[in-house]
Image (cartoon, rainbow, N blue to C red; front, side, top):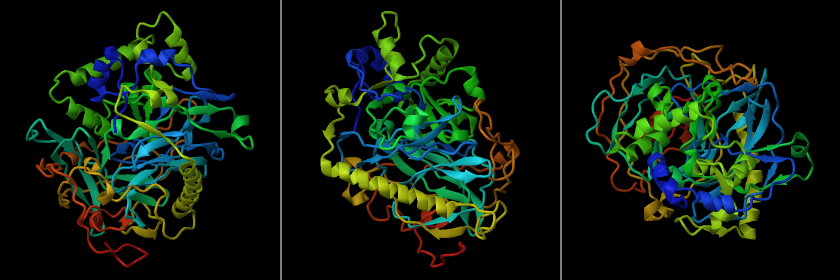
Length: 544
């Protein structure tokens, strides 16, 4: 599944950044009437990316942001009447995000998503906190998981990247991670594996919850151009979002080719952001340009890793990405507009020498009518619409169950403490958003063969993470965007790690149907997930 091509004058830049032909001809966007906008609704051309489309990977995950406000009830969001072709594509609803500049909530619109093979979406939510509300991130769990393990806090990462040269230019570095085995953490080293232009590797990582940490095993996701459709975030007047009978259907699509050029990571908020975040104040608020986050060794960016691999024969690619960023940082003129109205005004202006840069978004109708690219849209029939309405209620029920499961009350006997030595296992039902079984996917939709999993090294001595504030707490976020937690240095420990640089997992051929999910039926337990061992019957404390 590809996205339509951009205009010739702008395609070269986009292909350098994204490695694919994406977006729309900026001239046709300028000539297209704006989609109808409801009164009291501001369509934005910058903001957070829906976390089901792209989740941030941090090596030392921290508790989510805390705000003093309580989020409004979710709006009645109606899925658009056109969707991309594909049997593995579904609508995932939007949610409230926090805009610290406005000290108010904005709506992160739902998305059309090609579900990653073998995964199910566990949505994020705003949980209760003594200071107000706290964000708990969503994640892509194993599709066969029916249980979840809440683990003690993982030690400080020792991942610093490769310590030997790549076997060939076609290899990509996959980072290491702490894994829980035999009631302790062991370090599983990173290694080299062959890359694939159509697939992004999302490595092993952890998600913080009020009840403990959840281990998410690594998986292959579609490259950005094949993941689906992202819709523009919006602001609603407070009176409108609480109005009885109010509903909203997204109709403005974010041009993937443009927002990859203007992409940022904000780990403290657990989201990617796109658009104009070039001012120096945004750096202080924790925004990292997409091409620099990985080099900080704070986390891993699958999008950047894939694009760097696609441009591996272009020695100047990273330097040009940095130079483009610096140009936007130093010059406000060519920066992308911040809302749909500003983009429309710029498109009509005669004094817009960088008009291609301003085509951040386009109407869904225009994208669906376009014949320039390979992506095709089909109407959503009434039966499908009814399924989406039913799934929306299932989604809300599922979200409520997750909140109840992870609630950390003062008297909860099975909350995993920071110094705990055993995880807690709980039953957790399947998500409403589950990918098709691997054996039902077409040959072209099969991910690469999964690499062989390395054994953890228990000789690497784990050390607790340095952090600001007490465990499970975060500073209250105000208009300045403060409250970002800085990790302490663990350089001495990192030098102890033995990144093997193994040539594991050559990623050739297709994933075999048998053993796809390695025989597990629970999340967050790194040893049995990786080995595909038989399941424990213990529903209380884990014994592995």
